[in-house]
Length: 317
Image (cartoon, rainbow, N blue to C red; front, side):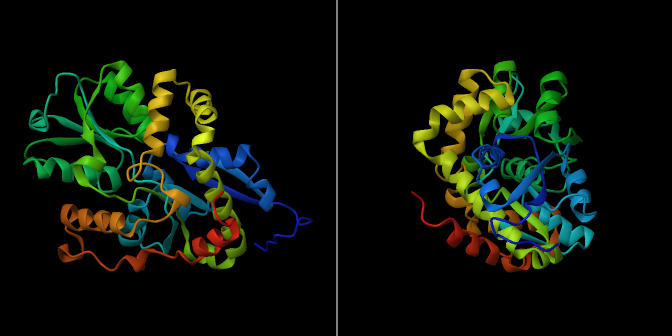
């Protein structure tokens, strides 16, 4: 694909695959505010039902850019042999360990079912690590059941009394509260810093389309800044209400989670190296990979495009 940033150039189409969660509000804003259009980009958003479908789709070239928990990129490299690189950060996950009303402690999850997307990646591993820290081991003390991405998983937890717990992020962590579920704590409070959502692409595509990728990341950074700007709070809450059909209280709670320092959206979509170290350490421990010793972070990263995009976006106003 040959691209140009010249105003007279034909806009470049980029297909972007996401989970339908509030962590993608910066993408929605960048589209609505024209940040992508001003950089000669046309964005086609695709929603994925689960991480397996997203990983398979990226490998098959069904879209160019994926936004999801970056542990999925690690899984593509290590279990599918795909040459994938993470090109930006995004957020720390904003997950809560949501449980049914009768569950009052993590110990109460003994003998219960944990709802997950894919059993060996991202938030499933984070949940398993949290339970392990409290003395519970998979297949000995509890079992897992596949329930799809966050939206379907939330609905399944509300509908199925056998699904006792699951990691849920906004806005669904707030809507399920309105339907009787409760939180035993945030992932941030239970595990500490964590690199959750980020953008990842096939390395070969990034090399061949560096200019388009840089422009994309610059517009994404601008969208992230727009969401985090306190002056835009009322408009962002209204947008969340509209996009996700939320109550006012759920939208306000979601926005507050998005802007919470450390656990919410990262300023300028920066990548958290300490958070990614946590990701790899959890994978090493819970999946027994790399002999229990996580590899160097750079194996999965190419942040050079992000660095150029940050310069392109300029200083935050």
